[in-house]
Length: 263
Ligand code: NAI
Image (tube, rainbow, N blue to C red; front, top):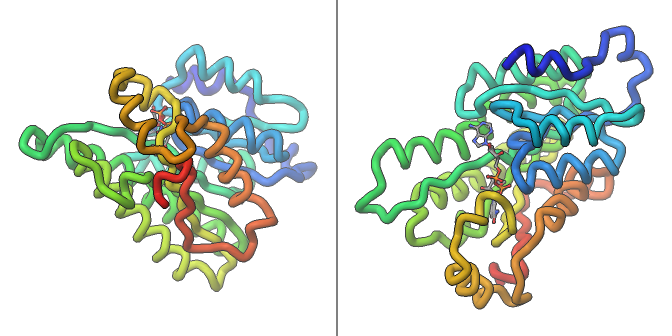
């Protein structure tokens, strides 16, 4: 793994002097929404730190595609469910890029089951990844953001965290927890100019949702006022807005990207 990551170009400390770009750390960057966010933030002029657990060929291609003279791309390997990995990843980005302007807590998992079939491990795994992971990273990143009195944290919640869903008690609890955590962090960090918001996607076409049958997808579509499933870029566009200067007076909000499901 570590050999893999070292095959990507790294920035030497002497290069730091000419750094101008803001730096965004994105978790779960190989996923549908994470990749779209990486692409969008690159187009907005960010340097990137992309977190994955393992480097697969498709991700290698993504890194090669995104890296150029205007965009430094760092790969940070780690499991966000482990506090020690989160701490190390933040330190690696600070060491290589000198700063983290934006943290996008995007990585997430589902383990859908009806309550009667849901094991304690199914519950705990989903909470640990989706909720604890965002806490660990926000905690470690905020230390550096506080010193600079500037930063953005964007948490990927879900419509399921707002409304609940049969078969997703673990996921709904984690995403609802993220909403409460977003508002608390926002209040705690506002005086340091660190803005913390959450996005609540509805139903977005990604590897997470592609395993659903056409029949289930049709049923979901019928509940979406705009009548269609969203694309990862729909979520990435809002992420870029929340990461940029134009959202400087917005904090503690949960914004839906769901074709109207939350009306
Ligand atoms: P995805 O499954 O395509 O991507 C998630 C990524 O997170 C994967 O690359 C996965 O390897 C990574 N990941 C999972 N556990 C990890 C861990 N412990 N450490 C590091 N990385 C880990 O899913 P998608 O659809 O792109 O989802 C992104 C976020 O958006 C998730 O938080 C998800 O809950 C949320 N979301 C997605 C919706 C959808 O309809 N696709 C709807 C609402 C929310």
